[in-house]
Image 1 (cartoon, rainbow, N blue to C red):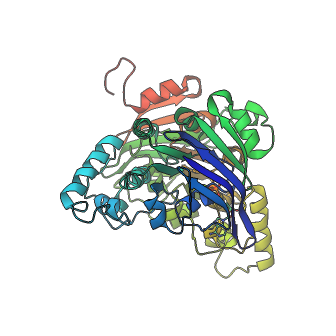
Image 2 (image 1 turned 30 degrees about the vertical axis):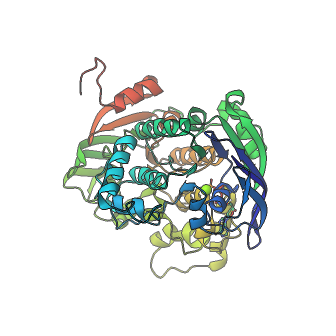
Image 3 (image 1 turned 120 degrees about the horizontal axis):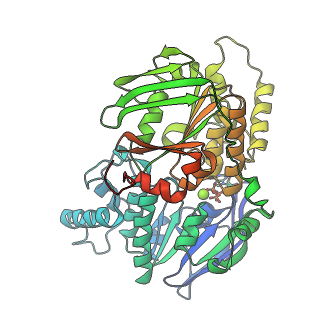
Length: 501
Ligand SMILES: Nc1ncnc2c1ncn2[C@@H]1O[C@H](COP(=O)(O)OP(=O)(O)OP(=O)(O)O)[C@@H](O)[C@H]1O
Ligand SMILES: [Mg+2]
């Protein structure tokens, strides 16, 4: 149905794609895999008309096509949900659905009633937690992702491309989305799925194409391909197996670093108390939107709390702004890089040094040569793929931008590091490196509160897991009790005997 041969795309001196090829059948769900910066987004943006190819040929249903613009891509029946989203935050859900989606027939298609009907149907089918008139900026990232899918489906495509749309989605949402996608593929829709979460890839897709450095390396049937083969094709290196994983060490922690008492954020967080010890990694789990994000942001001074007491090193502190938090030795990394993390029109170096600049004393001398060196060291350590430290953060791939958000805290002496999906969109190898760096920070005494939409990641790294439900902390799982099933059950707010907590 779709056939791409030897696609090429350069950005200046950067060869983002060379010899990228891919084939798909009608109704097939195929994964497009590759490390951060391997060219996945570049390839799918050629199909959606955002990138102009420099070479190669594309056929759709036996016919060779030229995709010149997003409009022509849509005309061919190709639709895409973007990694960085294409939604306008100020507009409502239903306004966004039709935005840029020209009506097929000029007359009836745009009627308000029909748009509302479509919006309500998609809200139901995808489990979007919002109303048709909710403004996109009032939704969290994962609901925005679902709206992005609904928007793509509005054009009734024959090929749907999803570029890391599940990266910040929690398990319950992923399940609804996958059920929807499988239904659509049975009706004939072809789906190209980009993700760094292997469990999802195996669950949804039949086949995969793997890119490495802009070249398609291998096509596989997933049922016959174990995950270490996929990683081998992606990286060109054998994975060292389980031992290579970052793992908390289950040390005993004695000294109490922070005490949180009855922290309450109106409507979101209800009377949370927690004791945090030096060097500890505490996981924070829950379905989407159970107060985890607000809890972390309250501790960072990015979300006001109405009640509660925070003590660090036995002294009461008031955290009203992120500046107060940084002064108290608290750091924060969020997976919402668009809104909270990355200054896209600043350089890689500026993005990496922003924390350093914020904490340095006014009037202290800076040495530009030294700063460049610090930035370059971080680029090497995190294997950030970039043309240099002076290029704009905008030109980096999604996962490499996320590494900038992580890198800026690594040199800091922190008491507490708050993490809200810190490795969102980061590939499997870099994710394990980053989690190892976090573990190293705990050896120097830093305590980490780690929230993740990915349960696997929490089970791997946390020493205990606090489960949030409707703003309350309803359960704490100790290392011995932790497994996927117990965690999933706890997240639903269901007590052991089946009653409600
Ligand atoms: N607009 C741009 N200007 C300059 N370089 C770019 C631009 N867009 C992408 N690149 C470069 O092209 C390469 C491929 O990037 P791409 O975004 O396709 O990677 P990706 O496989 O989607 O990675 P990720 O998993 O991190 O999203 C990277 O080296 C990136 O820096
Ligand atoms: Mg990408």
